[in-house]
Image (tube, rainbow, N blue to C red; front, side, top):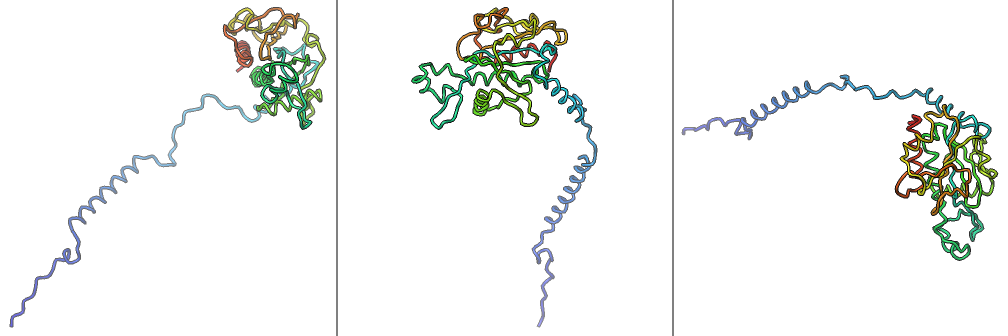
Length: 303
């Protein structure tokens, strides 16, 4: 009998391999490898230096920073005895509502319209809106955080509605929150002074009245009120403030109100030479202080 043998099967068909697919995948791999090699050639290596533009201003060294801080500390270290020699702008915050009251638990608090509204109406028979110690807090932050104070050219006083006169050291740091500020004021009004824990420097203290005896001889005193003569802040600085603090023949004092309603009057301060205003609109005390100090800093070149 004859035997019939089938032709050998195609290995591609036998193992289910598509040669065209293998060829196309191989070409794709080659193309991807070539493209990746081109991308690697185009991308700079990590070790390659990139030109960075120089900074706009060279930062001061640590020694220079320490020297400037020490210079500022020396300038502000003496609160008394150097007022006639130092050329500082003097600011008095007038009629500040800083009064203490004893609560039910026997602790003293700073009287304010939010926490003691019923007490103001029933016991004190006064409008609670008048008791705004937060106004003094805002104005102190504006004064003591200013570059004029940090450069050693500012002296701040407070006169309360109870005629208590307070002197502040230029290096004192007022608490940012009202609650801590209120606790600090209660401690000051009861102990009459606040000292630094590190070196014992008197930061705040109650001083004797009248305010005029603490002013250097020849000081020109001006009051700030919306009813005063209208001036642009820059024009006011040019008219009243010398070109530089070293060239000042006399010192200048501004009296700014720290009350919720009312004005600084010549009757309360007969030594006021003139009343000025810096806006057509009624401004808050902190806003008025920022405008005045900004003009003086521009005049004296303090940045």
